Image: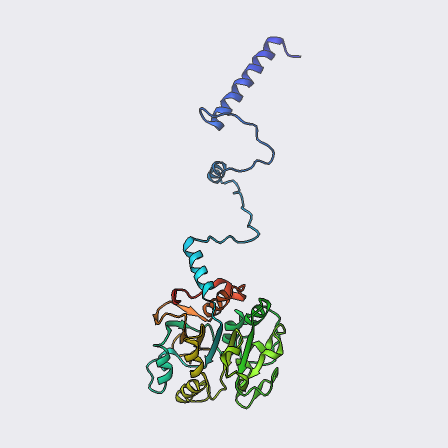
Length: 331
């Protein structure tokens, strides 16, 4: 057993050593605090940890992304929702670049249309070949399809399913389609690859109609209609002049009617001819559209997102990441 004096001497020596260690770790003027076994990091502690090369705190992702909505965006969205055309008709042409159509002498009607509404000078298709672009314009995704093959079946949300769910109506009108609801891959100059709604089980087959059922009384049109010319009349197989004449004869009366009946006409192309980075013409004409040339960069996804926002529909597929077309609408 140690003598009492030696014991006291050693005890004092240990206390002095502990005090010096504490000063080295805490620094002058610091306050000693007892840490819990699992401390909650504060910004100051995280900074010290990183200096000491200790493991950093890993933040956990929020269950849902948070989108910052500015007053300007709220106003823009409100204006777009207030537009809501009574009818929209979309015509899709084939395989010609912007440079092959705009200014071309064989397309006088299409070039005249470019001066009658909102003409987008920086409009682009998304991919090649045809079918994936039609799927993107209709459902916001190519659904894994990268070619023009036939016989696909999909169940995902799309423009038609969302319109119908919200109480609106939809129609797909295809030239040379053999009968209402037909699943034919081809018939005469009809190609199913250009009529994407045929592939979706959540779109009633009754909405898949031959072009001859396009109503002459435009008040009876569905809320949104896609019109698909056959492959002679969409420039796929036929000439630019043939397509230009066909458009004037078949859609010209509707376009004039739309200008005074709160309705909208959209003309676009599925893709270019692989010569100009998929640069294509896109034109919006209607009573609610401000005439002008617009250099906003748009794709099929922006067009789809605009249709969705006009009717306050949830965006489908990748259209959720695309902005709607703004600033072309009459106030």
